[in-house]
Image (cartoon, rainbow, N blue to C red; front, side, top):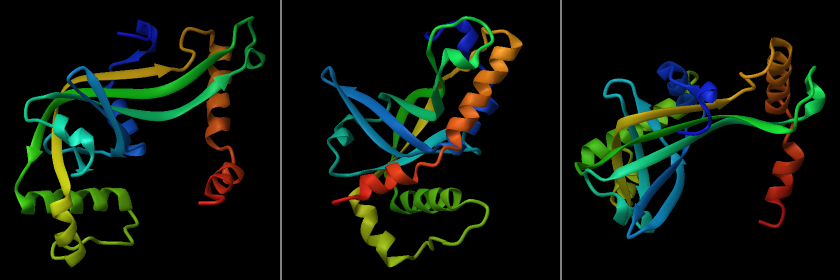
Length: 200
């Protein structure tokens, strides 16, 4: 397991918090030695302790989603370049990050009403505490959509928290690296986002 032990987090509650705050997961599966990767919102079901997601039925990765097969979902939290200039001691440049890898076995959700309920549950979670939109069970658009997606859950078999946060540095450098990560997370990205929308 990499990175080194001092960057490994075993606190499950912290890992669940990463999943909740950064639910756009990267689903990784394989078939015939070919990897498949899809980015999708994935929620953690507190009751069952499983991950739940949906994928477009026309996505080639669907053929790898077989009951009992293994999958990994990667959740990426904040990250940033750490300049040696922020340290009080002599260091080399590095990159700090918060990432969670969840591995487990796939179970397809076949029942149409159960699939619709996962859509309702995910919408409720993603809307947040100030829910402005409620997906109703008898929404006709959802009724049409449900035939074009595949819902599945992942029974978790392994949790890996990869939190590279300068834990191996002295207290002052550890604190300065945290400030660098905080600064990066508050950075105004409006210019970048607007440029991505240009000519679309």
